[in-house]
Length: 265
Image 1 (cartoon, rainbow, N blue to C red):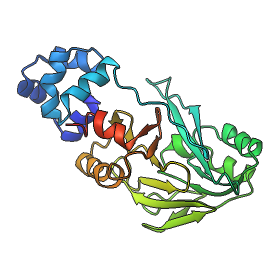
Image 2: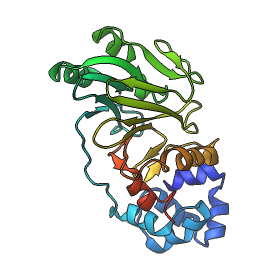
Image 3: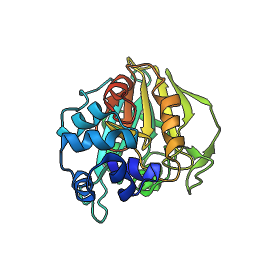
Image 4: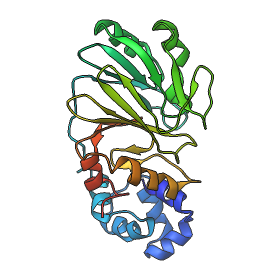
C-alpha cells in the first residue's frame, strides 16, 4: 500500500522522508512490512492515506467479513511470478439461480475449477466478461471458451485481445434475471472495467484490479485517475454491494469506505 501510493504520487524516498521527518532506513523497514505506528502516522498524510485505517491494516486488525450470496462463485488459482511465488488470482461465475444462465468474469490462471463448477451446478455459460487483459486474468480464455461451447467474450475496446470482442461503453446486459452494468474504472489498466450486477439477493460488483480489500491496484502513471474512478464509480454503489476483486478476499462498499486507507478519512 505504501509503495503503490508513493509511486502513484511520484514521491521519491528522500522527499517523502524529509516531509515525514523519518530516516530512509525507517521507510525501507515500513515498505518491507515493519509495523511502527508512529512512523506510519508520520508518512500517512504525505501519501494521502487515512492514518487510522493504515495502522489497522498494518497490524492486521482489518479483515473484511466473509461474504457469500446464492448465484456467486469465486475461484482462486495460483499464478506465481518472480519474487511473488505465492501470488494467486480470482475469477468468478455469476448465475441466475432460477434459469441457471451464467456469466464468467475473467478466467484466472486455470479455468478448470470454473469449468467443473459449471458442470456440477448444471449451468449454461452465456457470456464471458473480462475486467482487463493482464495475463493472470485471461490466461485460460481459449480453454474456457473451448470447454463451454464457445460463448462470446467481451473486453473494453481499449484493451483488444485475441478471443474477445470490444464491449460497447456503458451498456447494461440482461442474462436471465441478472442485469449487468458496465462501468469504466480504468487506471490500473487502460480499459479496466467493473461489472455491477443486480438480480441476486445482494448486489455484486466484479472490480478486477481496481480496488482490493484495504488497497487498490497499482497505477503509477494514472494514480489520481484510478482513485477518482474508484470513488466515483465503485464507492458510490449501494453500501451492501459485494466487491469481488482480482486478488484477495471479497469485501463490500461499506467496508472499503470505512477501512481502506486510500478512502477512509
